[in-house]
Image (cartoon, rainbow, N blue to C red; front, side):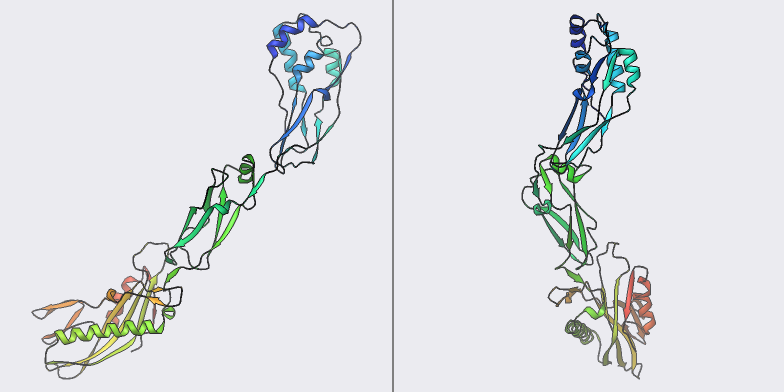
Length: 385
């Protein structure tokens, strides 16, 4: 660390010196520069900072006669001061991160003593100055993470991190930053960093405290999660959704089909399962589970049995932490269509004077519900005709 030189009192010195100084008619005077150097160390133990100062004003005042300052003008006096200020310098071999008991050394820069002797009739004498650090205060240790609560809310893999205060932090002005705050799942590890000023530890020391930790690792747990694979949904939940979907379909048949139509069979041929391709893109639907049915029916006009394809799907299936599954049976979605004077619309097709909600072939159902969403959703399929 470079010097801090004392310059206060120059005007005062300029008034006093002419009264006390006179020229020396004899040899050069020896001046020990070490007598005018002050070293001090401030701060907290282990983080102390040392500095030094050269009291040029006192040096000039003590040796004014040898310096030839009798009746010196203010301008001449300033010239002498500036000459000493610019040429007397040095540095400490260590000036930061100091602890009580550390030994440091001040070393003077190369000084042209010959020129000083020729110009001012003084012999400048100096040497390295050892200094032992002492008097630094002991910082109070604290853990900055004792004063926050870290929680995670929402559903995996879209959990969101929350950091809230838990008591009054003894060191004000601390903030906390997480390396990841959303898109979280159980088991994810989040690094939370305490921050303040340009150097957190130094900032705490300036308040009289020493942080025991500067980072904290939080492991996400306890989140319910949106199902991301079909195999994760419990079998009993799949059965319950299937039974409900078939009940809804059969109730619709009972209400809407007439005596000339007969439902022969409802056969589950598999499932489609859709999840978002990119979890960072906001959405309201985090998964779809489709139940695909092959329906066998007969109507008097057609005569023979015929098959067509029907679906039911549920959305946002949630896996709970206890291994159970949560879903809303009321979220069931089924094909919607109609017929007007033999012209069908929506998800419907006609057979003679009859129309049916669904698809005549499986490819059409797949294209409408899977291919049409392939830009946003990836899918699994267990469908087998």
